[in-house]
Amino acid sequence: MAGCTIASYQTLLYLFTFIATGEILCQVRNPERIQIPRVRSPVPIAATAQNNANVIGRPSNKQLANKQSSKSQQNSSRLLQQNPPAPPVSVKELFNSSSCVEPPFTCPHPRIQFYLYTRLTQNDPELLDVTDPESLYTSHFNPKHPVKIIIHGFQGGRNLSPSTDLRNAYFTRGNYNIIIVDYSTLAQIPCLNQVEWAPRFCGMCIAQLANYLADHPRGVPPDKLHLMG
Image (cartoon, rainbow, N blue to C red):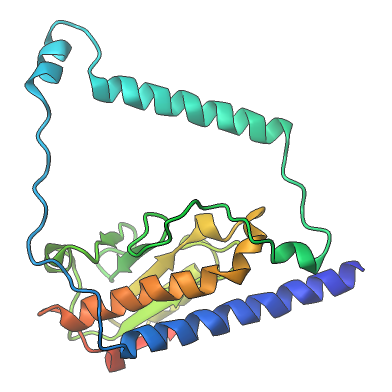
């Protein structure tokens, strides 16, 4: 039974990558692209009342929110240690319709991020915002260099092999724009049920990245992108 389950996992991982790649190609070829806003939203300025609160020694609303968030994370971590999630016992469980992420499933999504690595920023990657044209302008992206987009698999991440191996190997050969798609929080146990819909969803967001690069004055067309995953 254990051998069958492992083999089933491997089959699903191949299926995951195949579906995601197909979805990316379909989305990029779709003429009805998601339009990129040309003006960045103004950054909210902290309220004067909060600044005054800090002056007289009282915590600001932001400090209180951070403290509450930290306490909530500690409680969640404690509950997870006391009641660890049980691994699936059958392939049928993998296709449960529930999800570790609440809807709506829209792109861009905060748990699907695009990190740009260049030879100058290997140890300090830059996060690309596909809704902000200035994000590419202020980055070290060079349209004259080849673009490699790396998509990790289940239980993977941008700081885990083979993402790191591929990245390091390319930089030993020359200058590249390497973009790693990091959706690690969507591809972890007990989120195995997400293999049913996550490839299509992740593929849509990667297609948005491809359209962003194609429409940007400093970007590159889709036929200059090399996707690996």
